Length: 391
Image 1 (cartoon, one colour):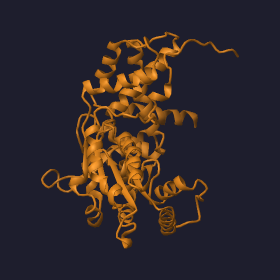
Image 2 (cartoon, rainbow, N blue to C red; image 1 turned 135 degrees about the vertical axis):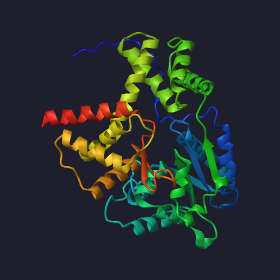
Image 3 (cartoon, rainbow, N blue to C red; image 1 turned 120 degrees about the horizontal axis):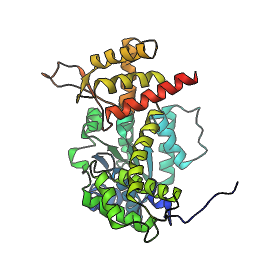
Image 4 (tube, rainbow, N blue to C red; image 1 turned 180 degrees about the vertical axis):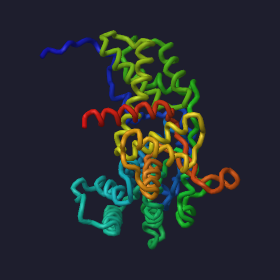
């Protein structure tokens, strides 16, 4: 087959991928400087330091943490200290064992997947750091997932590395969408993450998103393929959430749609098409991580919560029962249902937290973090019906 080709709007599409780490991060200079203030003792004296980064999706937490570590390594090296860092997405590497294995493979790609207990993995990491005389900064991204699944024992262990020598050789950067995630630490771990070590990442304004987009446009697109008013349109769409990741995803997808049409430039219609595509794509990826019983629970929640901010676990369980009847599935017992809720909470598809006194007693309240209920239910219904038709 011969493929039809035409000029692309992209000169370097990698510059609009999520993995690309820019040399400069517009409107995050303050956060970078604050992190330097927290971590300066690592470079100057070899002391351990820890920081907690929090803010909504797409506010630059991950990129800022990575950029900081790259730049701080240069500073530490000038002080005569070796420094390395490893980034762990706790949603992808769920549980203490998976997190430790990812860190060890950062240093030794051949480290075996099986055969070592958690204490043995910790001991291997300790020996490696002592042998190499390097200070390691561990970035635990979406740390809520780890804390919900495994508790804070691993965070506590990392905070005590090298303690017997009077100096730590491990520092941590914890990243979460919510300030409340820090409350999941036990008292011993909490002492290493004081409020003064927290760095807030506010949502980007429309003007800030425009600056970020212009930077990426210059890096990724050929001149003349994108009018200034298109940048304004993308920033306007993304400013509803203050989300730079969403804005950059829109830019990349709009460019891809323009290439599919061999248009040679990005149009407003490409942006509108990108908006529909990006939203659906992200949701599909997240739902693909769930099994059928979890989808049934999530569908019940999405249907019941449509006109509410929160629902109780009792309301969620009733809605789950109705969904099971509709799809002719066996309804699981309360204990199993509760486990499904915990799994969905850990995956970030729902937010489950204890209510305060005087709200509805001491029950657990459930909300949807940033996902429209109708969009969620429509997608789950389509997936469940597709599966049933295949069977």
